[in-house]
Length: 219
Image (cartoon, rainbow, N blue to C red; front, side):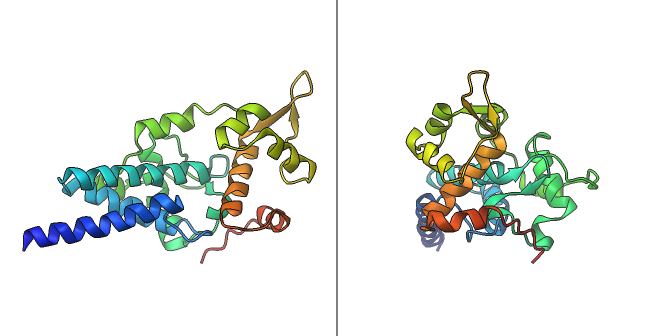
């Protein structure tokens, strides 16, 4: 009875866990919907599950959730960016959802213009909270990166970034006093989108069109 249910649950959680670690995300490439669903369900599971092995996997999956959210949430517009710009209105573009993100990150993720603070039932019911180490990582991100620092941060070579500059894929506008390239947070987000597309096997020649197409359809 109970032992079978536990073994069954652990087996399927581990399948989900390994698949997510391999893909690095929960979603189809152009939608944040599954990240949002995973965030709620994993947070709910964390509140009720006591098995240490399961909790370890759940906590790591939640860290991936929040990394995806903070990486693709554009602070200036309070919208999802990059491959995650396509949203489903009934799930991800509600006052409750944005209030949950605001509460769970202690105000780091701001409410979109025109949205008023709202009691986030999701936060209260599921005890949704961004892990401090993930939140602090993004709070402490520098406003500008040198080419060397950016290369190290994203795991690319300096020559790759210079090549992206040369072909017009990633051209930072800012320069230091010594005329060195300075990459802004927006440049970093653009580069992360490029990396995501490359990991999906999309050729470089097709990426500019994807980057310059802002799809905010309310599907």
